[in-house]
Image (cartoon, rainbow, N blue to C red):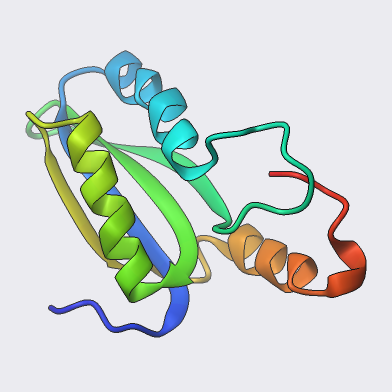
Length: 120
């Protein structure tokens, strides 16, 4: 399904990771892609978070990066993740906002001009 350019929750999924440790090790380089300066002032341009899913049948793991942004930007960020993980399958799709409620809440808080003193 093509990505729409609506603002919302998107998931970038890095599939086929053999261990949970490998999935967790990818979090830091992907976080630096999303937020190159972690000590910046103000909110991140794109609210983001991580989770890991395991597949008992294939004994592999998927690192899921939840982001709240426009579809085009989600696709561009997925390309950046592909550059970090060139030997892995990386997909991007619309996510369920109920699974990423904190991202939606973070965007709503940070889009209020009076609340721009926090960082990601």
